[in-house]
Length: 367
Image (cartoon, rainbow, N blue to C red; front, side, top):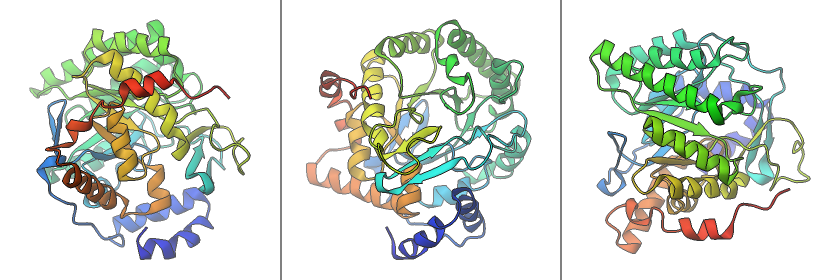
């Protein structure tokens, strides 16, 4: 944690979490948070889904819901930034309070419910910055009161296909009632069929290369569910998978203040469960399928552990709240130090090296 953030954090943590978040967005917009000088090291480059990522560290969706500061976040050192979740129509989300810090556990519980300003606002902002470069993905979702959620995802694809570096279909938030049912059975097959058809149609209409489509899933999946989702990914030839969103489990925060609040748990306690799901998907999908690991990444060590569990790239968000804006730089420098120490030519050398071990150990014990 850098000195400035160490000074500012107690002040921010006395605020309501949403107000503190809004202040951080404003600070980034006005340049009060200075950019970093991310290390330029070819050993950190990763090519995935036709995209060349300058480094494997990404900002997960949820921080920049309305595409207000993607370039400021890229300047902090992130190799890619994912904005959203964005829904077709603006919506306020769930009643407040809806974000709860658990600092002793490095965790957060949220039940935001896809609060955002809608497609039109995000598209306008992304259009204004389209020539600045950098990898900016768009995480798309469905409105809470939508009459047809699949249609909402199709609308998202049509809206952002020509402007996004990639799109993520988010069906794994626990805070929109019924949304996670789209991870299962015929609903998943119908969704993926519609989304991929929309993606290909948008590419043909705009005479562009098809925009890569990723799916984002929950960590709270059985091995049978992981196998079924993997079959659907293969059938519809998705470009990648993000494992994972927040968890409904309260393992690792038992007895903490706010631990029993409803919503999804993110941060440090998620590392074990999300990494088990990641390893299971790697086993199902094979060595060539792009996987992005999220959940519990807070250091170079945990980022590398995700890669050992099967990730090509990693994402973080919650740990940024606790460690401040210099965290990406520290993680990247830690990765370079690791490569120097072990003499590996790139990070792909360690990918999948602990998949079998993690699977043999089994999922985290039931609560």
